[in-house]
Image (cartoon, rainbow, N blue to C red):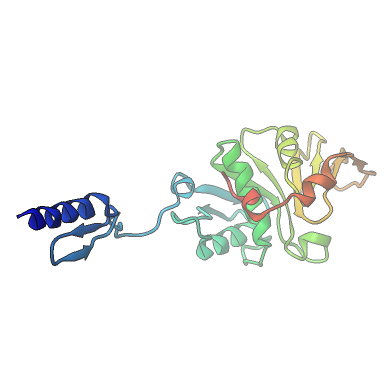
Amino acid sequence: MFLRSLVLLALFAGARDAPANLVRGPRLLVETPLVAQAVGPRVAHWAEALGPIEVASVASHESALVRLYSSDGVIDEQARRDFERAASIEGEPHPLALRLEQLVMKAAYHFKQTRLVIVSGWRPHAGRHATGEALDFKLAGVHPAQLAAFLRQLPRAGVGVYTHPRTQFVHLDVREPSYHWLDASPPGIKWREACLRDPWAEKRDASWTPDMDLPL
């Protein structure tokens, strides 16, 4: 009787001290999952909340509703093609740098604007525009100076603000090191641009990580 009591106490102690995912019995040891695994598509909450942005071109009069990220936070390649078609001069899509597209959309989401106007996207024989690394654009409802001020906070970017009453847009390109400028030239005339010096640009560029380009 005394021996039986000791055995029962030992079994009880083993069940009490066992990990939560183990169910013990006299002859049975069954492992059960600690947490039930959800079945269904993976979702990134920051991406799920993003709505489409209307991308419209002044030059080609093309437009498209673009949601660059799918709900799991992955780049939607069809959305990229739609963006690039809208950004071209004749409606024919030309490849653009992915990071450029990300930064433009980041700005739209930052200002909570749903319409993005491309003044000039891909065009031949035009520096970074010809390599797909630059866009001139506006955000409906956002003053170019405000837009440029936000973009200048981004690492590894070229940002120019065009301030003449008949221009009023922002140039954005992806580059390293960063470079910022102001241009008051009227349309069709090229004046000397003014460099906007940024003492923190080098440190900001060195700190760049890919997640900085996301609309978080």
